[in-house]
Amino acid sequence: MQKEYVMPCVEVWHDIVFVKGKGAVLEDTDGKKYLDCFGGVAVVNAGHCHPKIVSAMKEQLEKLTHLSTLYYTEPMPKLAKKLSEIAPMDRGKVKKTFFCNSGTEANEHAVTLAKKFTKKNEFIGLQCGFYGRGGMTMSLSGLGAWRGGLGPFMPGVLHAPAYYCYRCPMSYDEGPPECDYACVRYIEYMLKTETSQRVAAFVAEPIIGIGGCVPAPTDYFRLVKEILDKNEILLIVDEVQTGFGRSGKLFAIEHYDVEPDIISMAKGLGSGIPIGAITAKAQIADSYLGPHFSTFGGNPLSCAAALANIEVLLEEKLTENAERVGTHVLNRLKELQSRSPILDDAQGKGLMIGIEVISDKTRKTPAKDDILTTIMNESAKKGVLIGRGGLFYNRIRFQPPLTITQEQTDKALDVFEEAVKIAEKKL
Ligand SMILES: Cc1ncc(COP(=O)(O)O)c(C=O)c1O
Image (tube, rainbow, N blue to C red; front, side, top):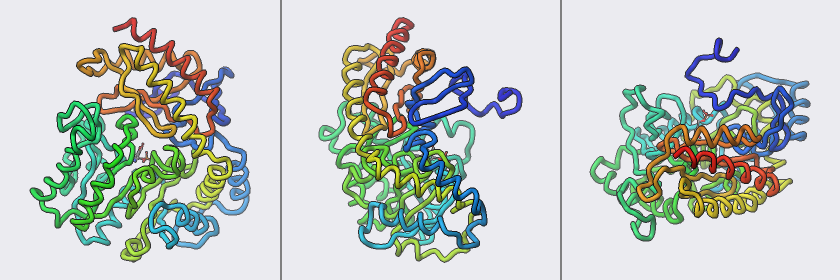
């Protein structure tokens, strides 16, 4: 039915219809069970259908489901207060939030707010970064496959080199310290040659998500922030994919000891319930007095779900679980990479891990599509769902619910290893 009635631009990875989910396990129409190692694109951090989130929603569903941002409701300011408490900047001070419905919208709003505060109107995005499918977000995105044929893009957008050390855009064979952060020095150079006075903000994911789960090197954000501060440019971190425990910290920017000015969020904020948000330092938020509005932004149901979700993440120590189980997964993938001719560059933080699939290790040649689809399909046949992404769409991504246990990941990795062996024979 989907093929007949849904637009063909919607990419579908498997011919399976899913009907149920609990924790990290999904079930299809035949009752077959799957270990979900992609979490609906890194969304269901608290696991599928967590009972506390379900009951918070049921309770809210009986009371009030919609009014828009034009009216006060109970859950929205409660959630804004909670985000103020956990946002990793201006600790101890109030931060303010605007709610919307998705990651795309969150980034569009973040850019709008930065324009209002700085009174400047140009932006720097990251090559290999992905920010969404709106006018500005698509322009900021630096993944060619998503932009193909869709231009012209918004003027006033610059792209900084990706911190993708395995395929360094600055042509270094090794990442830092060998390269001395050439990609950061390029930003400084770019600002001098392009004019820094017009740039309002640098918008970056702390770990490139759709670009293949590639974390920024250790000192990247500290060095970038020094340049931004010198030029009075804001730092907007896109935590749409990395936020809410995914990386082994509540927000991935906390790995880098740097404070952002604005954070955009979605995905893991609702653990499966659509919601987007930006949280900003109060002085930045207060510079924008509107008019601003969102029909579904701050929806009572979504906010009730997000509040319950944050409670679950904290109570069940899911961030810590992501760190512990993620380290185990990364170690196993690194070991597997050392034995397989088609795997390389396993990297990640917490449960946000990517590994390169290549056809030639010396040349780092990206593997062809059929190798990747073989790995994904063979894994799915044996009940394991994994993701993919990357500049060449050749990185396998492990981003399961943060409730996943080490035993479950071991089962999933055994299946992945078998699938890789089948794919190796196709080389
Ligand atoms: C880092 C990042 N930002 C923004 C988006 C866009 O979010 P949405 O699909 O909710 O619009 C995505 C989507 O995958 C993302 O990974």
